[in-house]
Amino acid sequence: MLPVTADDHLPGPVDRAPLPGGPVAVLTNPTAGRGRYRALLPRLLDGLAAAGRPVRLLPASGPGEAEAACRAAVADGAGALVAIGGDGTVHQALQAVAGTDVPFGPIPAGTGNDFALDTGFPADPLAAADVIASALRDGRRHTVDLARMSGVDGTERWYGAVLAAGFDAIVNERANRMRWPRGPRRYDLAIVVELARLRPRRYTMRLDGVPHEVDAVLVAVGNCPTYGGGMRICPDADPTDGLLDVVVAGRVDRRTLIRVKPRIYQGTHVSHPLVRSYRARTVELAAEGITTYADGERSLGLPVTISAVPGAVRLLR
Image 1 (cartoon, rainbow, N blue to C red):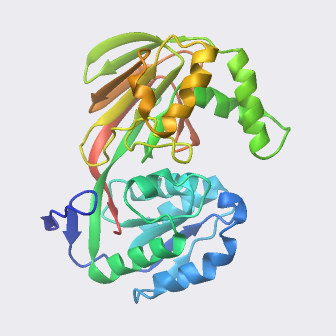
Image 2 (image 1 turned 90 degrees about the vertical axis):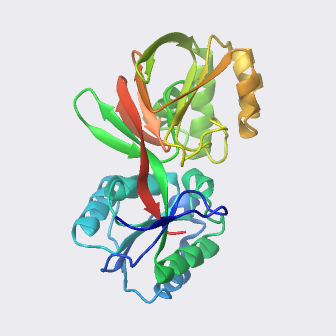
């Protein structure tokens, strides 16, 4: 067991002990953030190497290969894992380090960087690399919670930020099936299509064993407050409290949803009379025809069981 001390300025308890041996494995997504940070990669790698450890870039040409490369690096004795990219890249890396002693550092370089920013990393990639290098030199890690999902077939997935299981998940599913248009306009068109089809769905939830049945258009389960690049869907979620925040928008019509959705950026939507918030260690969630999206990535179909796992990842901060 590593020694744990309190630190009022950074999220989560801090471990101070020698880090595991082995190189720093680095996963990067050159297409993250539409490629605008690609030219920074040599400087980011140099910044990480300043910690005095060998740095090994992981080969990966897609999400499946990226996750497999991270798992292989951890199994081969990597001393740390760093992900350069957005929430999708972080999500792939978390599958490998969750529940292990291998420390992790996210460098925010994507369109959405919610997990990195919600856990206290700088928004500037070079500054984040400096923070991670400093933590590597000092043997410093901050433990934070993750959420663990379990499907009915026994499949398990981890996520760091938010699970979407309502309108936003349905929009993502629609956008991923569309061949045209490309880029962000595809997502905008998917919103228009799904708004026209908007209807409440019956959800069955068990929160720490207590049953709830609700008709809702939006359900989000947050370990962290934000998703979608800064939308504070679960504004009170804390990744160090051992709990999950569940936000449910009930029988909301199209006009109300359009009016309330911009308030998510400030987190003030939770004061709307049709929005309810819950908090639990374990969330069992079921509804027909919903494929969930975790950290913005396509994940498990409902029903799922989601558990808060305290201290599941050690962040290099």
